[in-house]
Length: 138
Image 1: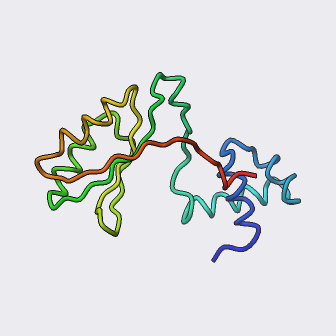
Image 2: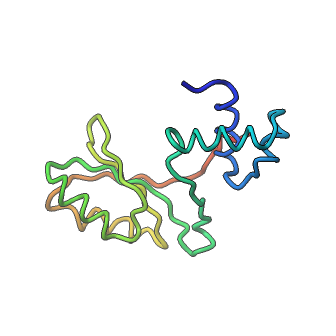
């Protein structure tokens, strides 16, 4: 069971996973060895990985979108998404559609191509991201 201090540590790490134990300790009034112990415990059960957030526009991949899929050919769709370098994540979801892919492209035609490539085994709907609001960040 997580307590308030664990949640504070997680919130800080979500915003910046490169914070040192000392920096975290200063923000939550705890010693760095105590922070280290808590983070190690969180890494055993709660924290599954540390990751990097990429600025895709700097990589000339400024088109961010989602493709919703309705399919019975889950394996075909999953394999396609694994092989397509524009697909950065795939979720199984509930509702009218049963899969949602997050896509980063250099141009809209690449987003359209995903729908064309999967048309023989999946019905799809494309959504383009117009803006991002980091509501979880302070």
